[in-house]
Every structure is written in structure tokens, then in C-alpha cells.
Image (cartoon, rainbow over all chains, first blue to last red; front, side):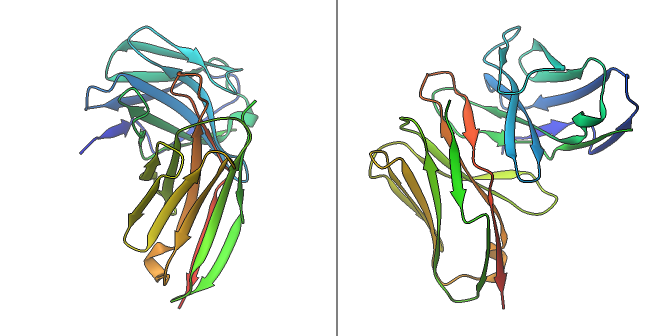
Length: 112
Length: 112
């Protein structure tokens, strides 16, 4: 089975801090994704990546950046955390050409 | 901009009854996905629908796709309690970039 592992289930940070969320997948998937999930808004795509060192902006990239130095790892960075970034963050990975995405358990991030 | 709408947003139904969740989307796409999310858990892939007229079934769930109407349905037959979850549809943007746009989800509660 595909395993997508997010480094923390719960995280509390302060406004202005630089925050790193880590995601690792073990199935050699080319594609990796970061979403945030908010009540009533569903999942919204922040960034995605097709390959090592490749990244594409999603629908809501403002205030975020990403890093993919190795195929199995995709990091989401909040450059200067703000309270409106309090949310559930979900990482996913997939094979190319329309294969379904496999999701991690999520990180519930609170910015105080 | 691709928009994906699900209805209803909330559905409470009795065990043994049948019901349908609808997923409408705004632009051409040939790939549609259904996911399930249990409370506090991550998303699990249910179905991938890849062409007009596609129908897939797993247990009491059946999904179909009408690309001309830009509509997918998720039909629940003789509901049982363990189908209680939030169901999301997601649509590929059709630009070949693997980007999905999710609906806001349907929270299904099955009452004994």
C-alpha cells in the first residue's frame, strides 16, 4: 500500500514564524501535492510538483513556498505565518496520467 | 476557471434507503474522482471515472459520469451506518497538468 507520511499531526506556531511542513511518500510517485482544507471550502491546492526540483502554483500559493529536493519528499513552507493560515494541511502523491492521489493523514496547524 | 459544485452539502438518511449525491462541474473534463473522508481521517480514493458513460460500482456505492452534461453522480443503495462520511468529487482541469479541483464535499450521516 502507498504510504504518505506527514511529519506532524498537530502543530502550534506563532505569527511571524517560519513554518515547515514535511511530507514523505514511499511509492516512487512522480507527482506530489499540498492542499489546505477548511470547513465549507473543501480542499484547495496550494502547490504541486511533477518531479524533483519542479514546482507549480496551485490556486492559493500566496504566503507559501515549497521545496522538492528528493523525489520522495515535498516540503511546504510558510514564510511568515499568519493567523489566516490556521488550517488542516494535506499532502498527496500520485503516479502520472490521471492516477488517483493518495493522501497523508494531515497536519492541523494553528497559528496564534 | 474550473468550478465544482456538489449537492447536497449535508445529507441525513435512514439505513436501508437509497440516495444520490450530485457533482456538477463548469468546464470540459474527461476525468473525475470520488473520495471518502471519515472524521479525523484522510481522504481515501473510491472511484476514478475516465470517460463519458463510465460507471463503477463497489459494494453499495455506484458512480457514473456524463461528460456532456458535466455531471457525475454517486448513488448509495440500501445505506448502512458505516457509509457515514464526507464524500468529495474532484475534477481534472483537462490541461494535462494533473491538477484537481475539489468540490466542497457532502457530509453523509446514516441514521439507524
